[in-house]
Length: 114
Image (cartoon, rainbow, N blue to C red; front, side, top):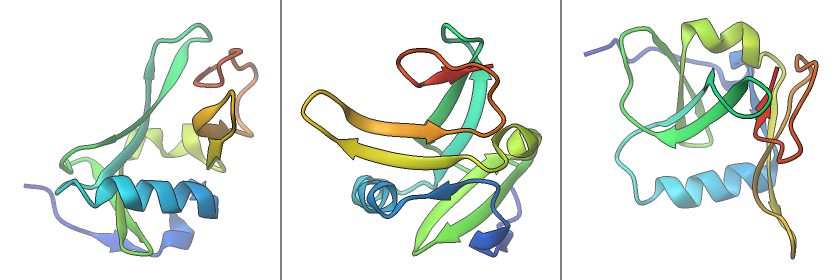
């Protein structure tokens, strides 16, 4: 099992808007695992965001945001540096969005980038 190292939320490469944090905490209430944030190959622009609940691995870092535990693989830190995660509840759009200052291109749906 990985060491459960907790660092200050301010040291985390990503941040959350109040709406995103509220929705993630609501979803986390049904889970017994931390929120995983990351990236993987895929999507129409080349990379997709990972946002799900799963156990911490040995190569992960962990942060706590208002009692929400967040884990990320160490290799994803540079790619996700400065990303702001938001949650929209509009009539035509509902879900998490990502503002990534490192992305050179993004797809129309907003869930993949390069």
